[in-house]
Length: 53
Image (cartoon, rainbow, N blue to C red; front, side):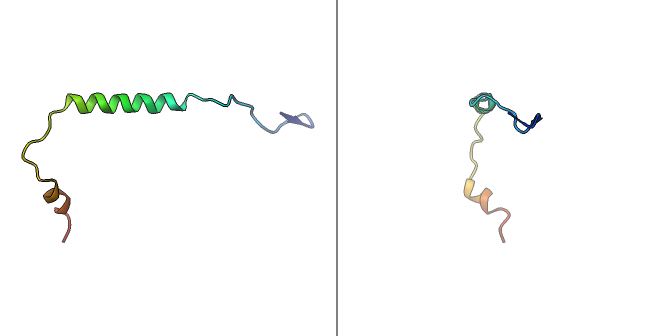
């Protein structure tokens, strides 16, 4: 868009490629989670209280 021969805006498509990055990140996270072994005998309450006084 031009006003008095000066550009005032970049006209871009309504849809962008931002969602593809999020989908790829989720796929990588799920792949990582499936590849890791669960930690046995861990008390989550003890871990969450560890830094509290």
